[in-house]
Length: 326
Length: 260
Ligand SMILES: Cc1cc2nc3c(=O)[nH]c(=O)nc-3n(C[C@H](O)[C@H](O)[C@H](O)COP(=O)(O)OP(=O)(O)OC[C@H]3O[C@@H](n4cnc5c(N)ncnc54)[C@H](O)[C@@H]3O)c2cc1C
Ligand SMILES: Cc1cc2nc3c(=O)[nH]c(=O)nc-3n(C[C@H](O)[C@H](O)[C@H](O)COP(=O)(O)OP(=O)(O)OC[C@H]3O[C@@H](n4cnc5c(N)ncnc54)[C@H](O)[C@@H]3O)c2cc1C
Image (tube, rainbow over all chains, first blue to last red; front, side, top):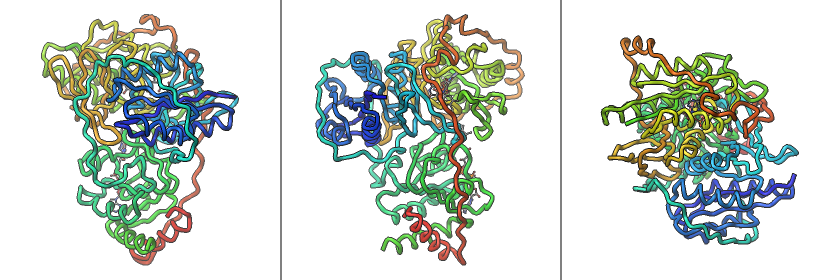
């Protein structure tokens, strides 16, 4: 089935969100397979680089919406997307399920009166149309969902797709002149994360995660050392109790109520493996569990398991990784 | 302040939850509870109402007869009234139909200053209903809020972003969805539990609310297939003579598997 796929490319201060560029590349893969086209919609200011990257990621066309869109606000973004989608009626709009993507997509779907499939981990183009694949109920089941309407809205879980392509040819750029609708909410303050020099969980290819067993903020020190030894693509994550206790920032929580991650390698240290935690990390390619309880459920999903005290194993692992990486 | 709180009944533990062939949650499969994040939404409502004085907090739940337990629990921790939307035709509704029902139930309460909800339900977890309700009621929204400060006629809401956080001013009336970090819900006392047992709730059907597009046939998003997740090969235990030997064996195994 031929489909016209649109992708919302989120950006802030001229920097495109990697998660939405990855969706552009995935859309291009689908469009190439089913004979369709990809249109990226970039909303914001300072969009030159965003437009270029959307093209490089695989968009055939980029629709550029500027003028009053400097700070993200739900209502002007909903209005702009609604105008474009009702004018052009593509098969689907794909949105990365970032905080903002997940804020605007349902409001837009409700305005369009269309169906919404959220938090997809994969997209498939079939005779049935575009399908969103979801892992649901904490990983206990996988569903394939379709939207009945012409403009389907689907959101994609950040981190599950391969990184965006960077070698696409330049896209055709269409400048849209849409006066921004008024926003009732106002941005009071935007506080960037402290630049700790650490890679964000969404971008990490390796995640070293700690749980209640870390015992406190200091306990996470051994995990940071291991992450550093594992190189620039490694980050530290945490289970709910560790984030709840304030040992690490809330933004590091992984699970049903925290981040959903899909790294190449996930090391769960002193994490029991409750279903709510597994829900956030079940997309990891290789899982290592380090736990002193041989019966811990985490071993049931681990490719490699080590039974032992993490405060002995992790520092030894850091040494072994350093030796391995030379 | 007149506050409406959307509260859902969910399975107690996802580990026991199952989907039917149609992709709908099998509610007979295990015990149910109040969605934990909705307890946070209710706590936020009760705290705001207490601070403002002369307020009402009405909880609205759409779900089977058993969802009445959720309304009772909410009354035991400070809700003043509850509305239960319940009929068989509602089973298998998608997020949009759910939002239509809830928006209609809120509209029926008369003018509200604030609608509070959880950011994402424990089971369906679409994280869509609050924003859809905001759209259907034509109210501004702030979603996934981790902190709320009250100002005259407005709330300043903190929202965690991928790279830091934002503080957003929401003029009232408006819709806010909260996550679990926003507060710590209070517990009921024995007395408040007993009192809540006597509470009587308005029970409405979708038709009472004038919403006809509900249930699987009206769903705009439909599950076409459900499957078990791909089976995982049993994992390999790594055991060395001491921590150092174990660590070296693990690194060798990871390198061998192409994971390092
Ligand atoms: C609605 C709801 C939502 C939730 N959302 C999330 C979520 O998003 N993410 C999340 O993680 N949890 C979530 N939870 C909590 C979840 O149910 C578990 O309580 C939590 O994941 C347990 O965290 P943990 O594994 O760190 O701690 P525990 O379960 O306490 O496990 C600690 C583990 O460490 C091991 N251990 C202890 N000391 C050592 C040592 N020295 N060396 C090696 N191993 C050691 C123990 O054997 C044990 O297995 C949620 C719960 C609810 C009810
Ligand atoms: C595994 C699974 C996957 C699903 N995927 C999709 C999908 O992709 N698209 C889709 O349209 N539908 C989907 N559904 C159906 C969807 O879950 C239901 O429509 C549900 O009634 C509303 O969505 P939610 O629970 O995901 O709500 P969310 O939007 O995640 O819930 C957020 C908040 O809204 C409020 N709320 C939600 N439902 C109710 C209620 N019944 N009563 C009171 N308050 C409520 C609560 O405050 C809740 O915390 C799915 C269902 C399941 C079981």
